[in-house]
Amino acid sequence: MQTDAEARIRERVHTVSGGEVAGILVAVFWAILVSFLAVALARLAQTLKATTKLVADVTDQAVPLLADASSAVRSAQTQIDRVDAIASDVQEVTSNASALSTTVASTFGGPLVKVAAFGYGVRRALGRKDGEPAKAPRRTVIVGRTVPAARREKRNRGKRD
Image (cartoon, rainbow, N blue to C red; front, side, top):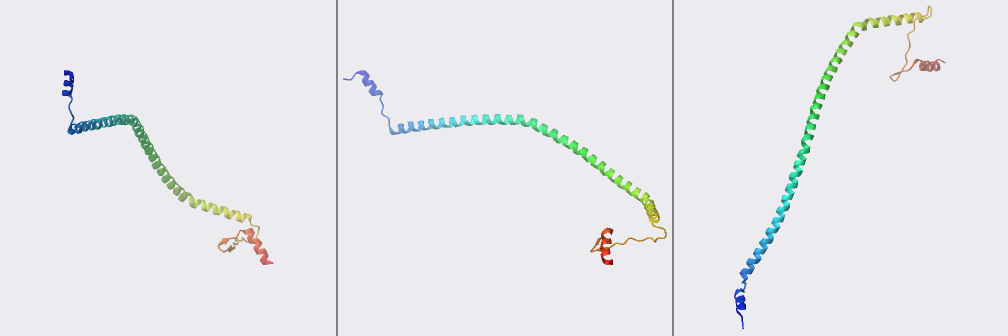
């Protein structure tokens, strides 16, 4: 009937209870969960490595740019200082020119006006015909405007006739 080998196999076969099945299911679930977490952590590690490399590259490029910007700001400040000095010099020259202009006007203004008036009087005296009295020029004012002499004569001719 049964051989010793078959009997030994039957002894080894063990029936599995419901608690053992539940334990195996929990163990498999935990194994799957740990696998997903391991994959997520591996991807997170790759992302952190890439981010670290990106930050290092940005830092390597930003440092020279900041140095260039700093030198540009220093150069601009130097130029602004120069322009400020030039502006103050121009202001001083302007005030000196104004003072010079005032001095020249007060020194030569009076005598030059007198010379010009004398020259005008001499021209008028020489330009007059002998025995003819000097005429003062007439001005016609129309609503706040002075009419030129040529137009005034045309208007007066029509009134005289």
